[in-house]
Image (cartoon, rainbow, N blue to C red):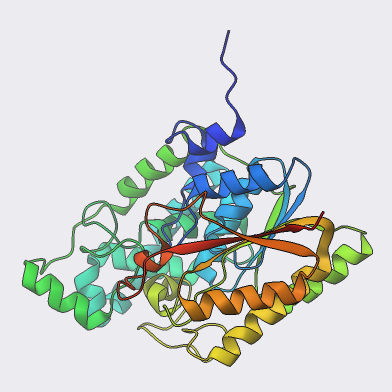
Length: 379
């Protein structure tokens, strides 16, 4: 008799199941560990409940919720995180992705002149054939609107940079894009003057085969992640849920930390692949930079948690992972108490990661710890 395997085990059991292979798509800075996401959702919600994450990142919370038979809605402002989140919930069929890959490879030769004229960083980071392919993908893939294109682009982003030989690039960090000049100087100092020669077709064929070898998941009927600013999207979501008389049962999220990092600059090379600037750029749009203004940071939390409170059921739970440092922690507590006055707050480290997000973001001058704030209805 075949042993029953729970959905949670399928997500967390190495790479033995389709759920676990798709769960780990997309390296991303300061992401929820899947074990943490599954633990929180299992502890504080039940099957059929509605889970909201207004700062979804690469979608660990939304994916775990969908796999564990919850309905879920996520919002993410960074296109890289959003793409990972959306594709994990419903990747396109393998044969369609492979067909699109081969189409792009055939188109690659049209971009040879453009590739040869690019800045030194790009020609040092990628071989000419890889760079031609990347330019074709950058121009041709309609990753926002077409599921096949978004799936292939997410896989490209996954392998865009990282360990030499295991990614498309010269040696680079996997989760964070280093600056152009720093990268060039580092490659020169280590003798990596020539980028790795990679056969794009062979490289992606083997990796796509591996990703799909345990099957394909489809949780599109349970989960959705929207590419938007939560201060805007949550108002729209509130209207929709009001019309359908639906409430949120679990608000599970981790807002950006005050003054820690600029998530868009840290992902500049992947954002370039998605049509963004060709060098690290501080974006002018609100909420797309490092949070260095204390008033603006508090306003962000106030708006997001205020809108979320309108949608939370009377028995709903709020679970927020935040930074241990005083300003972020105390501001988060103050805003949560304001918008959830009928909830009791406790601090929990039950599901603490082995490395905190603060530590992963290289903020070693501060106490490297995170706090889980749990708000439950008063009895």
